[in-house]
Length: 395
Image 1 (cartoon, rainbow, N blue to C red):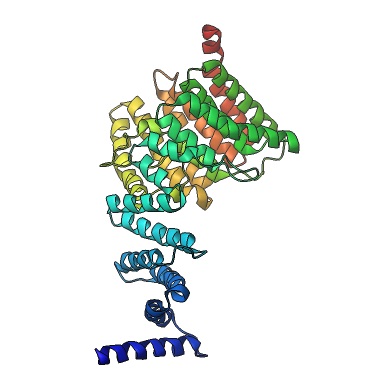
Image 2: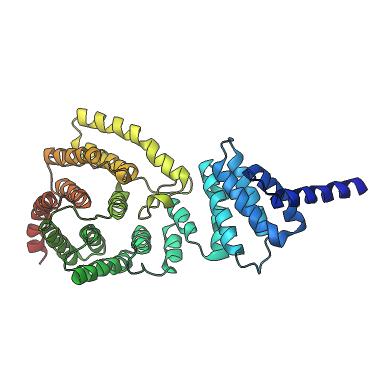
């Protein structure tokens, strides 16, 4: 026992000297010192150990090392005394890194359990995204209901996510009511600045869908006409603008949820309505891996003359292209996909649904890329196909 005790004391002394030395330490040396000192001075060194473990996990190139390092970081963060000011923040950082890696390596049940702990510790909404991926939309909506609405001046992700989960849970009236908050905020910005923000156009289009799902087709039609007016006003200026493409991409990808398989715990799907960074790594990769399968299916269906199904598959491909490419300045690459969707829709014998949808899709893409005059032409044609005759019939 005496030798072990002496060795521990020597290790502590070496660690202190190492940290107090004038030379620059590499991360491995620093981490080793913190591991030793966290055992004898946990209040001072456990927080430092957590930070070093997370940074090492981020930088490592050793296969499988991330998971071990993040698990150790979680263990260290749990041992920080409950009254420490930064305990919750550090524990959530460690839990967040650990759950992402668990999802990456396919250990989904464990990842969900970590998210549950993170939610219990801090109310973090990450659990809602995981539940949504598994089709547990009412539970996800309940978590998201507790968050505040979007703060003025910031992207309205809270509203997007809440409305998406309410809609997926079949609570269509509540979804439309929730989404009305961000539409109202866009209208106020338009009134204050004298010109509408581009995101108001695609938010109105999405709100129209929610209103129609809630059994309020007249209000949905009015929202579409208001969107057309917004695009017309945008077309009066030079067309450059400062579009919020991540917002447009999120709502566009959400619009394709009904054509995707239903999410289950065994076969999770993306948390449609949440921005890309909030998707679990395994779900994002599965969404990407579908692309070559869908490409082959679209080619087969088109060659066989099964155009309605080919159109649906082609749109699913466009949704994926937008999800993975919209943030990389790839408008010239994305434009042909929207053109192809419109061309395919025009070939259908019954264009009543597909063509207005394809034209609206392209119109919102054009708004998001500053091509407002072209967007106005597409949206005018789309509304001419769906708006006037149905409204007369309903009223």
